[in-house]
Image 1 (cartoon, one colour):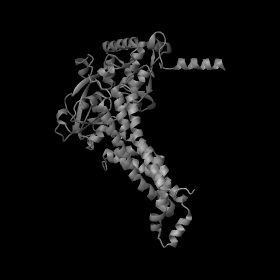
Image 2 (image 1 turned 180 degrees about the vertical axis):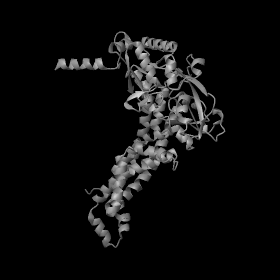
Image 3 (image 1 turned 60 degrees about the vertical axis):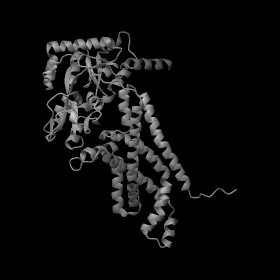
Image 4 (image 1 turned 90 degrees about the horizontal axis):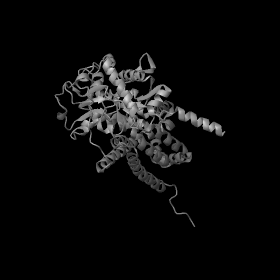
Length: 492
């Protein structure tokens, strides 16, 4: 048994990709020993970076795939891609989950303090995109306007340095341009690679790119601080690719080659002011907590009447009405709330453009209405039949019986699970960040990247969630006592 344990430990240690430390010789020696360099990217970034091959979805392609394959070949190994969320590329690299990170990773002074940055392989420009009928020629003309960008990018940092502008954060490349077309934002600031592929295209004929560079920067490969020998090897491979023209061929193949690649060959590091968890950060967290609370209350106020109507329909509505109610319940319970938010916000946009807050309240409210319906249905069925018969004997009609007898008792019985559902809704409100709402969890992820750590923002986020949920639980408990069947003191 002991031998088996030691053997299993050896297998795990040999198969780990750099987590917890590196053998003698560092990561480069480890890469050459296994004959493979493991690099991380996010396929959601899409074309032309890293994306699924249309002819073989199990295989990824893109100009960064070609560059890493060329680097691996020059190192005498093969390259293997692993999927990671873009916002977690640097933290996961620091953890040792893979060897290097490469996915439109911008060279910034902040990143240089955390990881080693390779020589640049692409010089990009920040491009401003507006609607065709807009008169804006400069980002400085957008004071007081909503400007879309991707989270944790240099473009986001630029917008934050201009306090008059309200940054609107997205997770995907196409969504900000859709919102610009639908007039939810006034402009979009992103890298020219993204703007030329997703913004100023025939798919968005009402948009145009402002013909000047807001700023310039470089894409680099991220390497752990303890791997200088790996950085030297990658830099050497990139220099050789530039000398023999292979890098130029790869960029031309992806239609990315331009004059910037020769004019600004030196590395450009975007300097961003270091940030700390201070009073300003705390105010942002508290503000996001109020957003979370407001969304949750509004959504639950919608979910309760929807749930009551559905429950009554299922129990007393007859076969046809009951079937419709059941279809609604199964539809909203059987599909992810994240999908429902996407459909409401992006899917309905060509027909009716909901604001992010409206879509968030509607999506969460309709979804939780389905769950509340089953809670109330169980409560209605738990009421003794004698209550209905007594009400009929008093001359009450069906609607009066529901309104004055059954529904009030059902709500009292359903109060404990309703409290539980509201706390769940409070946490599920974090999903609305996908439609640009910055609530408490999204604020935590933004701060974690800014502050280069998850512990302090995570504790602050958890504390605020507890501060929101505990008082609500106490209020519900007091309501339960007040609505108890027998409020008289126990007889001695």
